[in-house]
Image (cartoon, rainbow, N blue to C red; front, side):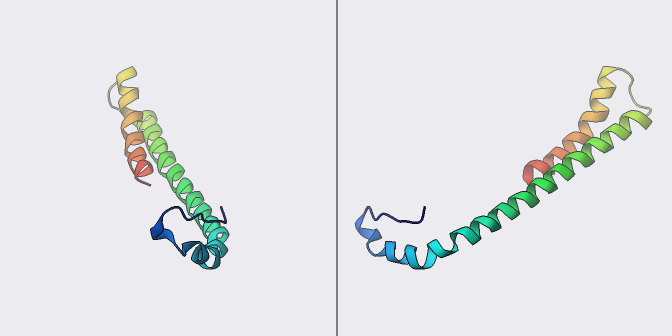
Length: 89
């Protein structure tokens, strides 16, 4: 998208501004956006992995409830605590 089409009277003259000031920076801004997105994905996976690891430790070394309910709570609660920051990121 390197061209801007003026459609309403208020946009008169903006196509020149877009062509000279905005369009040359679009590729650099897209690269920056992709880098920020990659970092956010990395942080999200770290938060989820931390919650899963903590939940696995609770299940393996915990002395809580036994059975399927204990397994779900022991693994699910820490995983949920990791999912909240992952969602917010």
